[in-house]
Length: 79
Image (tube, rainbow, N blue to C red; front, side, top):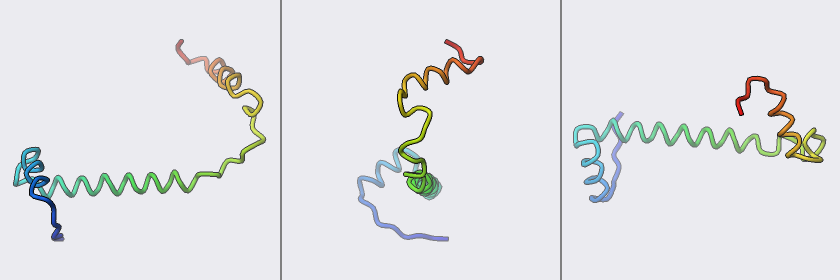
């Protein structure tokens, strides 16, 4: 499908420098794919905000001690 967009001359010049005039469409299409994927990921992250309660966790009293115990419990951990 064709899409007509308007961009500044300087932006087109930089685009041509980077990918060449013949690769504009493919490059812009990939940028759009990447941007849409990023937006989807952010939406997924934001939808999970607040899904874990604020209290009632093993780590509430001393998060540092809890992390250390988790690290020591992993026998495959290096260091």
